[in-house]
Length: 154
Figure (cartoon, helix red, strand yellow):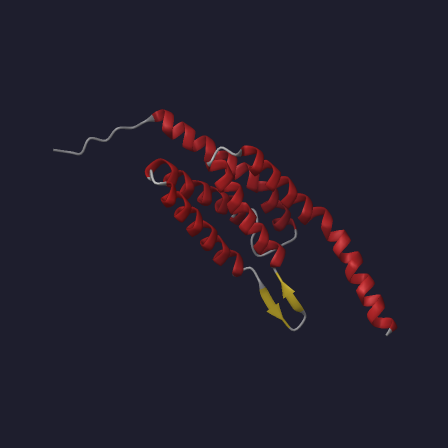
């Protein structure tokens, strides 16, 4: 006798809704990285957000123990940190990829927030991440130029 498979269309719609929001909120961050030809970009960031959201949704809907939820959360954070670590490169010129790595980690938090229906947190993380990547770069260049000027004077 085949197993009884029940399809719950409302749950599917709810999960699809969450995953789509996680995807859409990660696109601006991925777009910024893609436009700057970074190692992670328009594909990586939405996938990280969707994956984090999906794992957290499974944890929320399958596991009943709050301690289990925190273990899922811990695993997601650790795994995304490992992925982000791959974006950091050290060379003679210095260290690159730290903003991309931090953004990957933040994108995971966006997916987790969406899974928990904390859309205000997810939107705020998206806006702060995008603004930091897009506008703080000019401030960083000024600081670096000022440091170089001081170094040249000495």
